[in-house]
Amino acid sequence: MNLKLKKPLVFFDIESTGLSISNDRIVEISFVKLAVNGEIKSLTKRVNPEKQISEEARMVHGISNEDVSSCPKFIEIAKTLSQFIEGCDLGGYNCVKFDLPLLAEEFLRVNIDLKLEGRNIVDAQKIFHLMEPRTLSAAFKFYCNKELTDAHSAEADTLATLEVLDAQVLKYEGRVIKDNFGKESIPVQNDMQTLHKLSLSNQIDFAGRFVFNKAGVAVINFGKHKDKPVNEIIRKEPSYYDWFMNSDFPLESKKRFTEMKIKEMSK
Image 1 (cartoon, one colour):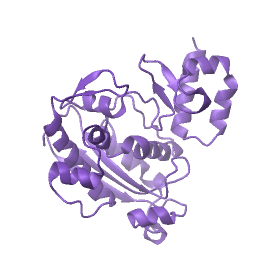
Image 2 (image 1 turned 45 degrees about the horizontal axis):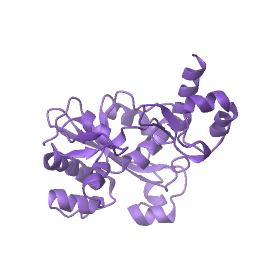
Image 3 (image 1 turned 60 degrees about the vertical axis):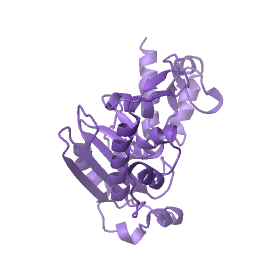
Image 4 (image 1 turned 180 degrees about the vertical axis):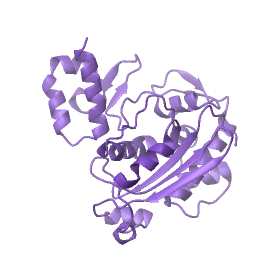
């Protein structure tokens, strides 16, 4: 492996009942942990989502309601999953937009808080798209010269993503690219903090409802108040917080908004 680690790095992939972070559930999850010494451990679980798998999702990952009817519920394996990734950086392929928010949502439903603080998050798709816009199968072929024959199997996708990021570091180390704001030049380095900056440099919550702007100020990232400072909205329009908390937003986003409100009101 070419990756230089200061703590374990866990890659993961999720298959779900659908594409809604708030309403859908995990049906399969796979973790692959790369230790600092290069040792690799994996943990793959199928989950009874306690709701119907959409036909669209079933056609993608091939997992039916019958396949998971006798599997453990998420609450029954949550502690095992949490312990497996404790103290680890996290990575995946397109994990920032979907897998991370969905995993955080599932954990919060069972009172486990998956926080960004203290973790580096690396998204191999983000780095890949900055360099060579393609799909995971194409990335695997491009970087590793292999065919991904079992795509949309959580474990196969996860193992492939690990190999892709490892090859990306070898290929791009030393190259300079622009940051998320298109201004700051960032050299690609074999370091989890740098890869985190490329993957998730400005997000506050996993779903990206709140982000830091180029001045480092927390701002709202959607809707009528897009790009407005969070502290300004909290002070001038307190009803917005109530609307957000009563709407269909991810629990993790609501938790981060509450934390920002408490911090602002304590000033």
